[in-house]
View 1: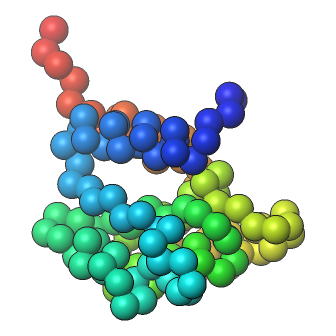
View 2: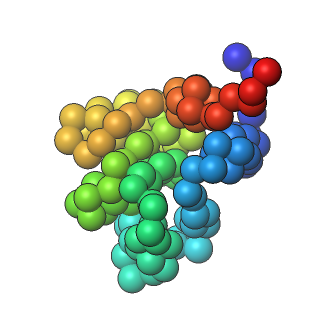
View 3: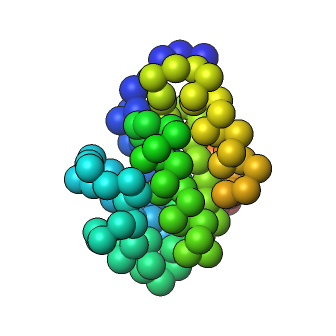
Length: 129
């Protein structure tokens, strides 16, 4: 496995999603700094509520606060919620793993970005040979 920044991972994921004609919206979580979740009084809820958007994929800082709050908000709004373990971080590994365990037990799926990319690649229409 080679290192890739969160930006590089996001760019790859979006490129694959768009190649597969997956409905998607990009919400910049940094604009929500100071709030517990991206849905709290901001346009993230509006962006996710666009027709065809059924899944919210969450990553960022910090796992047990902002990421967790956003994933919980999405789950409670009936979105399929995926938290990317390798695209989130926390001050300690113990807090990171604890936050992910809580999310996985109740608030949706927790997986790595490579898992999501694999699903998108498998769904990509194959050109006729």
